[in-house]
Structures are given as structure tokens and as C-alpha cells.
Image (cartoon, rainbow, N blue to C red; front, side):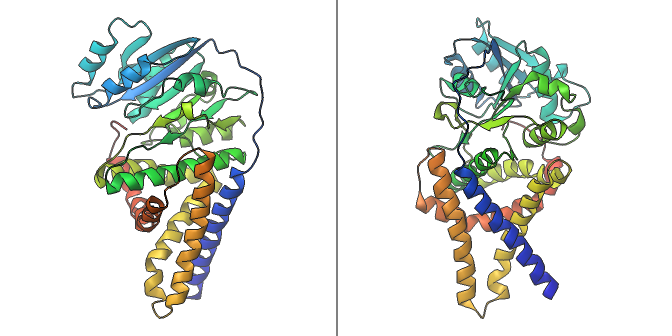
Length: 371
């Protein structure tokens, strides 16, 4: 039994040390520069699978982009079985900077979304690649704001995604949970230890993609086109990455009003965590400690049911650490603080992390569709 307590203590120490590190990272000063990279053009690539409910809004957002240099929009249809193709072709007709292709053009050895992405990258004509998902909404200066981060030999831009106007309990939780993910991502980027990125909003140079053979090293996994790919690049060569905090570069992520849809998305994402040890052992340690720390908090009231004060103190410590991270981080990314939403997230997050962690092993059975 003593070894069990040592194990729990070890995970809690790692977990709280991680949060403290994230807080410290938020206050590291960034190197600023007036140097402007000469960008001849940008290829924006969006993959879609059965996205008829969102594709119209996305195309309209793309049409409204304000960017002085050349750009193209490549929409890759991954064998949609709904009305996606017809909606795309109808709404891009007459616009020369739009391209409609199918995932058939991608590397035949790739699976899922990575095959569609590969198809888009193959036909892209510009060195700078920019990615988002069909369920996202884009501000008018999204391209311009993301490209302005290419200074001081930056190779990879980690974009920010936010949740706006939640209406259900699931979407309230999603808003805070996504903010915490972005805060952690921003912090580790400032620390020089970029751990994660999101395909909803990211950019990198095409030469990076070709330098490691595209997605060939991760061809069989479900996800991997963002966080694992970023770590794969860093393992191959030390790249210069940056997190964009320009609010005009933020994309609005798709709201999930139902718990089922939110859980399916998170389970897909968590599938990467199970193999992260191959690409970033520090990140994997953080993932594992987070899972076991929250698992411990589920059983804590039962393990120490006779000592209410100890249980209360232990929960209070967790709340303080996470709330300080939230307060510091949410102001850094210029979003509004909401104590009640955070309190709700704090309560639900404990069983949520454990549930998603356990179900992540089923992620290969889910597949990918509109994100």
C-alpha cells in the first residue's frame, strides 16, 4: 500500500510542478522584431469530410480575407457522402483563387485526414502553408495576422483557437477547457518547449514538410497532423516556432452543444497522447501525470473519508494552482475571465479527464470527419 501512495505523490508533484512551470512560462518576455519576412504567397488548405453544415460559412470567411500578397484556397474533399461537393463547387465558381480537389491525389499510403492534407500540399503553389478546419470561423485578417509572425526565421506558427457564445453545459465546459489548452500551449511555446499545436489554426513552411517525407513516419495513426507532426519536426531538426497572440489571427472553433460530440472530438485528440512517448517524453510525462492526478481526485473522498479537512485542503490546492494558471493565461491571450464557468469546468474536468483518457484507446475506431 505504501508504494501506491508513493506513486500518487509522485504524480501529484509532477502535475503541480507542470502547472507552476506553465505559469512561469506565461511571463517570459518574447523577442520582438521589426523584421518583415518577404512572403510571396500563401496556400490555405482545408480538408473536409461531410461538412455540408459548415462549409458555406467557411467559404464566405475565406472570400472576405484581406491580404496584400498572393494567396490561394485549396479545399480538399475527403470522399464526402453528403452534399459537400455541390455546395463547394457552387460557391467557388468564378473565383480563381479557389481550388477544389479530392483526397485521391494524396499519398496512397496515408490514412484518414493526413491523406487529404497531403493532397492539398501537393497541389499548393506557395512555400507558406496555412491550415484550418471546416467547422471554424475566420476573422477578415486571419491570413495577414498569421503571416506577420514569420519574423526572426520562424518556421512554424501555432495559432490560437477560441470558443465563443456557448449555450449548453457541454459548450460552457468546452470554452474553458479549450482556453486551458491554449494557455498551456502558449506557455510551453514561450518556454522554448513547444509541445502541441492544433490543425484548426497552424502554419508552416512547405520545405519542413518535404524535409521529413511529409506524414510518412506517422502514416498509420488517426490524427498526428498537428501536435505529433510538430514534435516530429523538432526531433528531426530544431525548428523555430511561435504562438500567435494577435487576436486577428484567432479562429473561432466549432461549438459542440452535445456531450457526445465533444467527447468524440476529444477522444480523437487524446489518441495522440497514447503514443506521444515516441515523440516527446516530457509531453508524455505531463499527459500521464495529469491522468493519474485526476484519477486520484476521484478516489480521494473514499480513501480519506474520515478526514474531511484533508480532502478539502487537497481539492483547494488543486483549485488554486489551476485557477492561477487560468487567470494569468486568459489575460495573456486577451480573453474574458469567467469565474463561474471556470468553477463548473473545475468540477467536471476531473471525471472528464479520466473518461477521455480511458476511451482514447478506442480512437482508431472513430475515424475523422468534420472537425
